[in-house]
Length: 549
Length: 62
Image 1 (cartoon, rainbow over the protein chains, first blue to last red):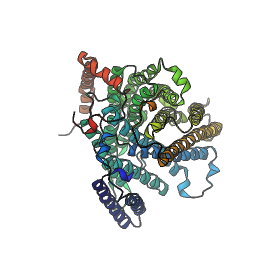
Image 2 (cartoon, chains in turn yellow, blue):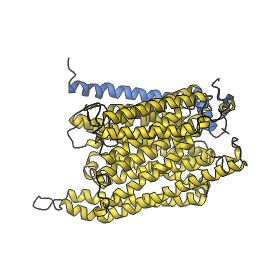
Image 3 (cartoon, one colour):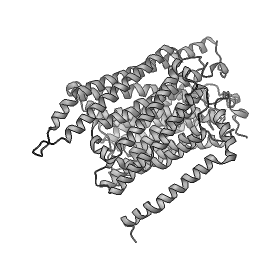
Image 4 (spheres, rainbow over the protein chains, first blue to last red):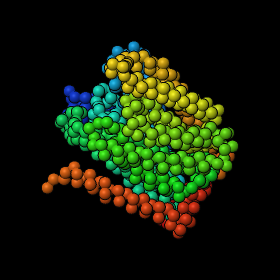
């Protein structure tokens, strides 16, 4: 992979890694006695490890000019591998923390890092940012080049984004294990990690802009709109929500500049728009490219996709306050959030319906091809979970669902059924294209993964629906004397069987992801072996590798 | 001069509503503008074309 960089790009990479290593050293020295010092060593080791790989290939011959006649896919390939790695890691911790809820005595590792409160953000960050983020970076760079018919502007900046983003994820996850957190849901990393992410993200946005400037197509394909919105809005959300003052430049701890209900409002404006633009817009970008590609049919209605895009962009921004019903937030702000959440059904169902209508006439392909079925099920779950979300945002429904497992079930219907399914479908479509193979190593394992994932999702979601509604009802049941009919512990006992079911569902999903990771690894291995034997030189694929054949 | 809560509420409820409606109308006009039909149709179908190499060697000249 280093061989793909020009000599000057390799030198620049070395300079960047040296600066990063020095920053790590400074953090380690200044932050001694504080957890930030430990993170300094993490940064130092990370920079050293990447520099080691760089140095190993530093004197490889330079790539020739003919590279400019091809797309630059090395970062996408690395991104796919990282995606699958993070999927297994994040979902493993998901299963562990869910097992802890069913059997609290499972804390057989009697260590602080293995406590629920620390492992739970490891799970959420591992799957949302590790798995989801790497999938978004990998696929966006692929889609951007294909739809623009232009190569990425240079070869170093995509690596900077991919590797730098993973450094952020490593800092986040190691931080939670150690106890570094700013305690804002989905925005737990502390200030120095946040600042680093801003740098990475600006470079990511610039890659997009620079490639679009070079595009050979008159019109920017709608998938890129979604990806661009994802990058731009996540940048805005991240910066505004993470405005904080560190207690000192040599300490990890910081305090947000907002206080009280303002902090809560900003946090859920961030939290819900992270769902909108991290977990939805980017993945819709995937759907609008890989699904038509795989089905070999153009999107049902291009105009509808434009209207859905702007609908999501206008409406979502206002919806976050539905997380704060019955709080100190002004009533009209709560109502505004509720209203916009219901209006959101229009663009959400437009996208889901558009996707399913695209498959109309290609249902025989859906039947035969597990990859396309992953995408179809994703669109269905997108439709179902957005309906559920709008419904739960209604104040009176929220009074039953809030703080219960219904919410947990809802996010997992979205996360497992929509986000993970569209990602796996896209990866199964993308891997053979990227590694110049006709199919995956084992189409039967793709099939197995599909059924494991679907079973796991359904078991999980039904368990949480039951558990959540029982919880909500038990908490609001009054005895005749006006006292609560059930104690909190009664509701815990009632939830126990559902928690076991959830762990089983999660285990199915993890098993599926592991099968997928194995399949991807074996596909890459087979491609490598062929390259070594010289039977497949690195020539562009012909039409034979096109989808649907 | 301080901006009080009522001012912000008034602004959000009046102008906030109008500019969003204006944006929405602008989007609908753009989407259904007759001369845009051709480029949308092309974009819709072009992703299915064989796309294994950048155009013009990807040099950036249009």
